[in-house]
Length: 347
Image (cartoon, rainbow, N blue to C red; front, side, top):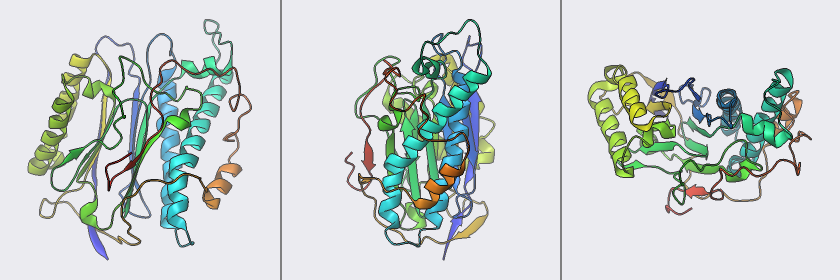
């Protein structure tokens, strides 16, 4: 039995300069225990004239991710069946992204049916989805597992116990301009990047986990500037604690928004080091394994499949979307999915 400090969490979103509406959404839930997993997610609605309903798309994205992530974490906690590790890895890589994207598409099409407008006349289901386009980043932490997903731009930033800053889901190649993958893209689940990181002991858990929309990273002139910001944030949190920095973070985000001109959103979780204060919670770091690449050939946990099948309106095979040739590829698209191997550093 190992004592894990309670995660301190914070989330804030700042509307972009001269923007009529904040298209970003964020959500933080849970404590990081087996029974109450820590879930963080941010979504960035595209916001331009071609995506007039993207604030709804971003809201659906964060809400649906929180639901599916909690299901996933519950499966982790109930892993007493043989072969649990491989099954969950495969579900994290293929099953969850596919189900999440189809959940989102179903919500979007349902919203359009309930709230059509005369000035928006999409010619196909794909055109409807485009109105709601959004990116998504989400993460789940339990006492012995850290998994994260990303579709589109933005950053998942991790600071380890030794202060090393890493971006495990950074794309294999830099995106060009406003080019990005999106939930409104045909077969979007195939573009989701996944990070799988078992935690053999509490010391292997990240010290700081931050999810941010690209309004933050675009405010820096280089990637090194963003990395230094993350390292500096970690140092300030270590020195002053979250309560000592919480009032400053919105000001930093506002400054970033002025530079980038975009909505800027940050959701973070901090694990205080020993002696830094904060209550401790007991949690077992059991079943620990070394980080490795997620394998292909998904076998979805039965409990997750059964629960999803029971949910009305959440069928993963909505005939208006699945394999519909009218749902065309969105031009804002980039590289194929990547599963990050934390141990070797190879995709």
